[in-house]
Length: 116
Image (cartoon, rainbow, N blue to C red):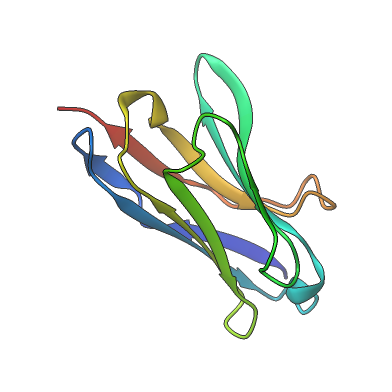
């Protein structure tokens, strides 16, 4: 059974950094799919924060995270990463990964809380 498992979240002070990981298992076509990181809060709709193409060479970011977040992937290990620097309180949310071409395929997510 294909699944995605996110990890790396936690509580961090404003200005801090976190690195999130998304591990795909049972997903033999992982390297054929663009991958996204999303975040969601109780008061806002789910937001796409970053996209990476199948090669890992092309990326795209939401304006709110440009210059602070970096998405990367390791196709051999079936991993997608999100390096988050200079975190702000508004970055707080549940982060999960997914493939835009597979709308229902997502993990449980990992909680990021940015607070002093």
